[in-house]
Length: 224
Image (tube, rainbow, N blue to C red; front, side):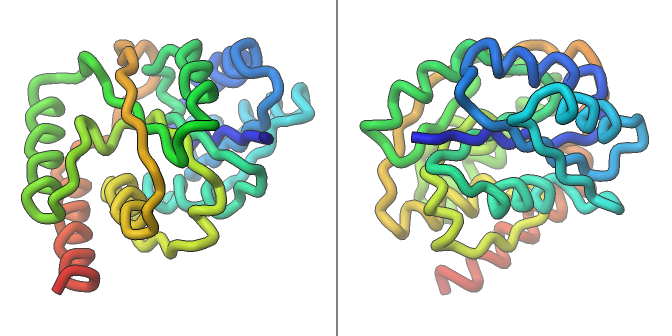
């Protein structure tokens, strides 16, 4: 079973420099695809240097900033191996936990992490709580932490669905469409670490409003 790990990045030059070698130390038989969303801090150059160093690292560069969902989507659509795992480039997860996800491959089509203790501000925790509750209310899906950026998928899922989201709704959209296709899902708790480098761009009012719009656009298209 061949695996590829997708890392969407934006302004994470210090973090990506650490994440890539750490992944190889934990899961040496994997491939890595870094998707840089036109970072102005030279994240793309650091990623290219890592690709020069490691044969199993590939980099996709966006010529202009396209947003989180579009960046993650590019990674999923470029994945050609049997399984695809993704984690954000902010280095806020213990990559040693990758082994637990890989061990579940024979038993589940999708393995979804949930952060046991989120290392965010109270504002971020509140918006995340409201978002997860909204998804449960509208779509009757029950995940502890649907937008946790620590997930493993059977890659063939992305040849069967069309991803429309270009923002934070992408995780929920994928899980909703996987549910319609009867993909099996296992949830597992993971550690969430404080951000050491870089600046988070999530939970801005503009991102929240675009995500809410995508939620109701999906509801209108697929539920009504």
